[in-house]
Image 1 (cartoon, one colour):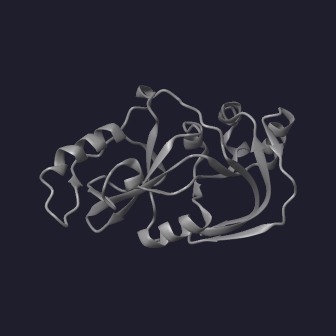
Image 2: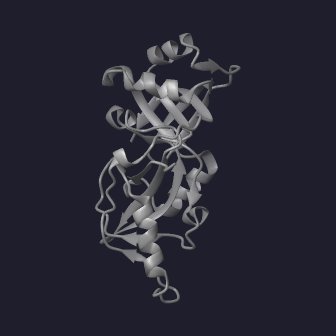
Image 3: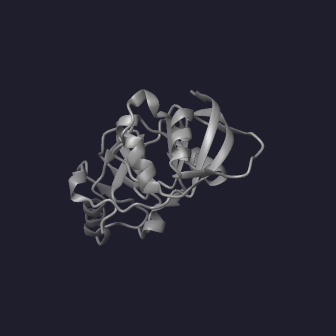
Length: 218
């Protein structure tokens, strides 16, 4: 089965690549996602991370969608009543400070059925979904079997999440590998758009789901 893959840009206003990686390794990844895009995502999807640097775009890592934060409280209550999620023991409120904003974690949940959870979210109108962030553990490109710190591309900057053709991306890297000079990085042409209809959904259970308050996005 193929994994669905997306590409997501990290804004220069809040992070350098090094600063983003340092934060991700310390407190994990949490990236704001619109209701329209959230409906298209599925737990287990792979999110490639990129940043515009000069005239090029650097693809420098990825995460797998295994965490979610910030669903509307009414939707959380509905998920609880359906038995899709179960609240974990109470925890002390935890203030999270990120380069792009801050929020307070006020509760955590065990997810019994990620697929049912996402199906229910997809049925909601935009205003009933909440201000959602998705996340997971940061991985370098080396974790994906690519022996480089980053790949230079001409993919144009775009906010949000865009379906990404990782198979073609990896194949183009392989074609460049034998001609790569010592100390140089792979540079690829093309934008690697993907048709989501080519991918079969392979749900992965969420490892964490959090309730938050005082969400202030810079």
